[in-house]
Amino acid sequence: MTTDALPKPRSDARLKTLPEDRQAQIADFARTRSLAQTVQWLSQAGLNTSISAVSQFLRWHRLKQDLARSEAALQDKLADIVRHDPTATAERLQHVGQVFFAMSSLQKQDPRAWYLSQTIALRKAGL
Image (cartoon, rainbow, N blue to C red; front, side, top):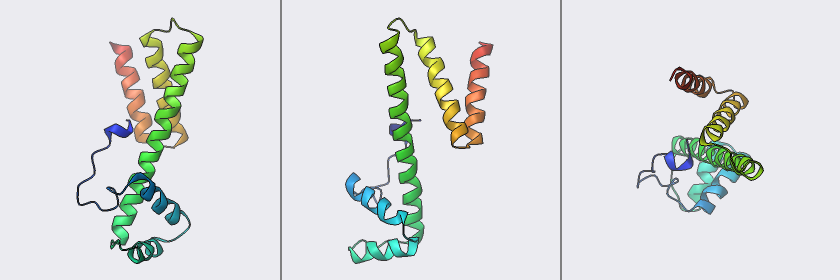
């Protein structure tokens, strides 16, 4: 999944539709403060919201950041492979992507992602 695959935020999602730099400020502030403190801080800045909305925003923002980092790392790895072996086939690059995704799911201890990566690999092997 890439960051482009995330659903577009609803137009009434106040926090998710803020500019990227403002979203980063909120996430940075919330990293060392409670949800209630973050809601109060946002309220003082003229942005009325709820603890639930801030919690959902922070979860969404972390996912978005994680996906962006993973996507960048995979692109770097694929570029590195092509640079060192210009004859690399699409199948080889696909295999590297599959391995990268499986490693990422293990690192994040995400059993669902691991299961999906293994299911895809088995189905592909069966074809």
